[in-house]
Amino acid sequence: MLTLRCALSVLALPSEWPISVEHPDQLAGIVSTITNLRAPRTTPYDIAVAFPPGTDLVPYADAGATWWLAEFDPDTVSLDQVRGVLRDGPAVP
Image (cartoon, rainbow, N blue to C red):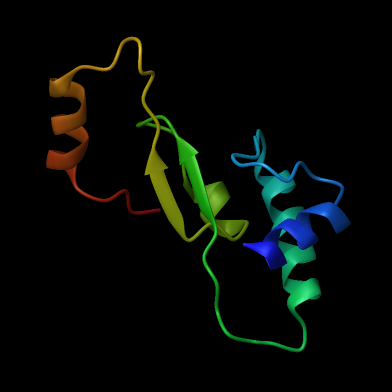
């Protein structure tokens, strides 16, 4: 966590999570910077993005996202909505 916080400081990004990403290009820039900061290490790492069900994830996967977290509005989410996402299985970009 400390390394990540330091990386975020270098990136001039907030040190708290989550970081709002509104466009795949933003994510690509973050992934690129973190990858460069990790050099010379080449071990893989994960980048998670949270979006509502039904979001087109392909551009975010292309930008470096390796995990999708289903995002639900806590004020309106229903058990049926969550079960539907679980029933549909993992999103495949």
